[in-house]
Each structure stands twice: as structure tokens, then as C-alpha cells.
Image 1 (cartoon, rainbow, N blue to C red):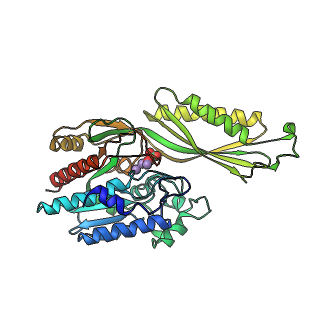
Image 2 (image 1 turned 30 degrees about the horizontal axis):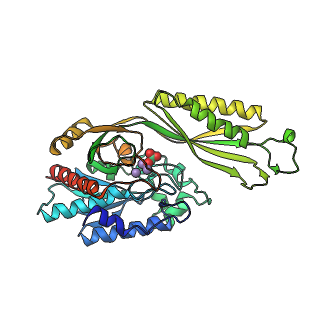
Length: 394
Ligand code: GLV
Ligand code: MN
Ligand code: MN
Ligand code: MN
């Protein structure tokens, strides 16, 4: 089956009628349906599927074992995201298994497709949640207490998905069994001009939640000079973020939550989520420090308060050179490019040899409904993944 054919089968799952694109989030009804769909597709291919202690799905071709070749990605999306970010890596893995099987190939090393939970952090705020939990990159208690916008904790959501919340956390056994991990992903900028490439590195990046506090009040009855409106320092912080992002750094505010959120209500507090990325740790932290300083000054000047919580962070990732060279060689030489996007592969790269294959994105748009990859490029991605997996699992 082709990758595009498999993607077409899930086109209705999580389609967002309001935002456009897809809204699929960790352990929500849609992600659970997608997980069921994946399980059925894997089982139809004779793979045996099990969930690990964090709810990540593993579909084994043959018996699980040490030094395994692992491929896969995620099925969740950002709010109103594209069809390819995540699912392309999962369906390409299924299609690559079809191609390998059709050629008579049998893996000599243990081999599995993995589907990580909540890669985007669209529900609980922390990206790469499943891989962070597995590698111990997030404290299990802190993770259990993460809340979604409705106040549902990760612990409750996990329980609803049949995952025992008491067992969430580092999974050294699963990690020790991975010989190497290869994630195929749609490229998310305009960096790739041929159908398939490799990732060289990922920017240092993280998320910070700024909470501005003021005084909730009436929009008509409260004189301008009597207000302590937290939206004002919040707005100034957004502008400060733009100004602080220099020398290739990126700073984005994509989520602002005024409380209580009424048109005729001066907010009592405003949550502003900052996503900041840069070449290295020091540059990223410098950008964030500058934005924090500006936010504090703005809050003071507006008679408001501000507190900041770091919700997630990861230093620059440089993918394993040896594995990348090996992949490039078996693929006959393909370009390697850095990326500003985060991935489960970036989390795993701290523990096991990891590589990424990118499929060309002609629009340069991602995390939006317009995200696109041409069908023939997707099939080139499947062929490349099959070639790489055959080499690694032989
Ligand atoms: C995830 O896709 C991220 O880079 O934010
Ligand atoms: Mn993404
Ligand atoms: Mn992704
Ligand atoms: Mn990502």
C-alpha cells in the first residue's frame, strides 16, 4: 500500500471543521481512534502491537529483542495542523514493511514501528511527551500533573486510554533495546529541493509560560486610569519577543489565554506561551532572558505582576554522524540539512544512534492546513526508508 493511500484512510479522523486541517491530541478521542487504526493496520501485516508503560505503541515484526531497528513517528497534531507532520512517518513505516515483505526480506535484527504519544504538546503543553517520558527527560510526577485546557490531568487522560498513570515514567528497558532509531518526517521549511534528504541537527528550543496578573473588571465602568490590565504587558511582551529574536533565533507567541476571556471583561490574568529557538543553548537562553526582562518591566509599568515557568527545553541536537553517513551511502548520497523543528528523534538522539529522513515540502508550510508533500515524493520517502531499514536490519 502507498503512503498516500494510507494517509487517505485517516483523512476524516480529527479533521477540524473550525480551524481547518487536523486537531489530534495526546490521549484524546481522535488520537485513540488513530491508535486503533494503526494497531489494525499493523496487525493486518502480522506485526504484534503492544503499548509501553507510557502508552507509546510498538508494532514488532517478529519477536521483540535487543539491538532493535526502530522506525516511526507520531499521530497527533498541533491545533489545526497539516496531514503529514507525524502521520507521514507512521504510514511510511507501514508502507516500507509492505515493500520489504514483497521483496522477500526478513529482518535479522528485531524490528519495530513505534508511535509516540503527544509529540506536539498540543494538549498538555510539553512536546515529545511520550519520548520524553520514556527517556526520563521529564519527571514522571511533573508529567502526571500536567493539565490540558479543560483541567484534565495527564494522569486522568492516560487512565482513560488504558495506560496506568502510576507506571508513567522512564523506561530504561525499552530504551536499552533500541539499537537505532530512524524517523521519517515531512520537511517543515523550504530547505529541501530534492525529494528526500537527511537531518543534520535541530535547534535548541523550549517553551516558557508567562502569566501576567492584574485586576479583572468591567470594560465599560472602569476608567482607563483605574485599570491594571494584564493584556497590556502581555502585548508588550509579544513585541519584545519579535525584537529579541536576532541572528537566526526564532521567538513565537502562538497561544495567548486571557482569563476569563470575555469581550466586555478586563482580564484578571493572561497566559502567554513563548516558543523560543536558536542555534545553541546560550543564544536561546539569552533571547528568553531578554524577553523576560522586558516582560517584567512592562508588568511593573502597568501595575501588574508576571511569573514565568519553563514548560520544556532541549539543547541543540546533532544527529549521529556514523548513522547519517551510513544512510547517505545506502541512498546514494542525499543532502543533509539542519531543522528548526523538534522531533521525538531529537529526544532519542540523546540516548541511542538516531537519524531522520526528510520528504520535500514544496510549500515550506507546516503546522498549518496548507502543509503538503507530493505523492511521488512521499513514495520516494517510502523507498528510501525501506532501503535504509533493509540495510540496518540485515
Ligand atoms: C514540533 O513539531 C515542534 O517543532 O514544535
Ligand atoms: Mn510538528
Ligand atoms: Mn512531527
Ligand atoms: Mn515536531
